[in-house]
Image (tube, rainbow, N blue to C red; front, side, top):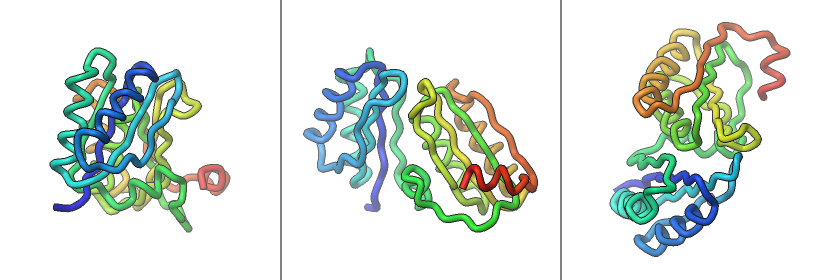
Length: 182
């Protein structure tokens, strides 16, 4: 089995930390990131084999369901997810810019994965609820038609969970905008 990615997002820090502890004790998973995000929510991102990640996320959901905002398990996450989260993506030129915003942290990662697997686009940045009152966004780029297709499909996937906030595609953004993003 390949690596999987899972995430939990909780309303409170105490439930989140306790749930993250239960996740790593449930299965052989690696805690990639666990932290408080705006506005006092808690996220934990794990990786490991699909069955282990699935079991760990299920444990958190079942034991701490009252405080759960959202969660996901991705069996084969796009390779651009982590560079976009950590801001290490290197982009030379932006032909077209896509932006998608969500009300939570989990939904934006799923949306980014869907977008990157839909069309030939590059994930630039995934901002996960830091300094945004719990909202999150993804910036991606590529040719106009590819970005439009990726944003449309990502929007559909997030809308099903009720976490979609807004999105746009800018064809040939001004160089000043590109510099501000990169």
